[in-house]
Image (cartoon, rainbow over all chains, first blue to last red; front, side):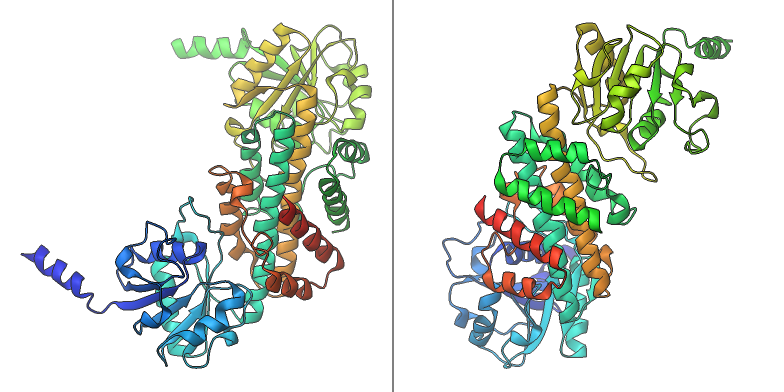
Length: 264
Length: 264
């Protein structure tokens, strides 16, 4: 009997705030998955460019291919490439609701004036095929109005234990930093794996080193954590490595980063 | 009674192989700490350049300041800078024992001919003030003689679950790869932390991203894991980031790695 009532109340979604998502790239997709488990926010609709290409993990009944089919929601999350945010936000068929984007670089102001503006920037790297534990993802929030900030804080803290108020300017510096510590660090892994492949050594031997290097900066500053031939000014090893490297770009990267380490 | 016998047998170190270490840099120091817990190998002596400067965690009675004071040991581990390995190995006051170095770049052959040669290369980043769980550290082994290889395998597997037979040539490629995935990745963390500092954002916001980026390459190749404006060819964001960066070297690194990501 109780179970029946709970189920009915659940079906009515009483008191739950509604969310629309526009765009199902890596960020939109993982947010949709994360929201599926929320007890306070209900994913209402997802606008996608192509119904056929939408990930199969997303319930079909939520999808719409036409942005005009979106019904008003408490929060509309625009998760598209930076260049399309302004245009997409102008196409939303309702007004005076909270509309946020998820970009690290775009100003909050690029959003159309017809709705209230905000930003919900999850500072994490999202890939298909790798599940994300949202509990540890820092959410960087910004909103024009105090009440909207509260609403975003509510949403973010229903997903994560790590929620920050961040200005547009600070968010930009975080995004540039994120490119170095994530995108560029990952490219260092790519170069390492290419060198291993060329010499018939399994890349997995390097995984404990990669994890320890990442772990260490939780205990000391990256500057204190720096090891290796560059910081030791070990010229013999540096020359041998440069001689070893045949790929022109890898060699340039080796020289430039070595120089930068030595000048910090 | 039993306890007494066990203790006596322990004190006699019956059947335990002996280890000498020469050099107490980051690698030598962590190896000494790791060996302290071994039940099959006993740390016999450690030769250091300065008794005063030796880390206080190391038992004083094991230290000698004169390499001539070393007694023969089953394995002598030379853990000094690459340029000093040949010279130090020639100074060892005994012959026909197994002597190994711990270098990623030096050939096994640089060791003096008066002892049997080998390599014990722990593929990890060691810093003072950050304890290492040796169980997960890959040990790369090489030896001239089959029996010595067995002895090294015994030693390495008493410390770690991850032991590899690696030729000098493969070891060099691993070391170059390690510079990229660890030393250079860590420098990317340094640049990220500098940018955060300049803009009054706490670096700790980036730690979950750093950990997830490192973790992800255990599930997919780094090439598949690549995200960010470079791989998306998001020219708008790339231009904004370059405009944002005022440090000349950081900007050069941004451009070179972006180009490299786009050409992989």
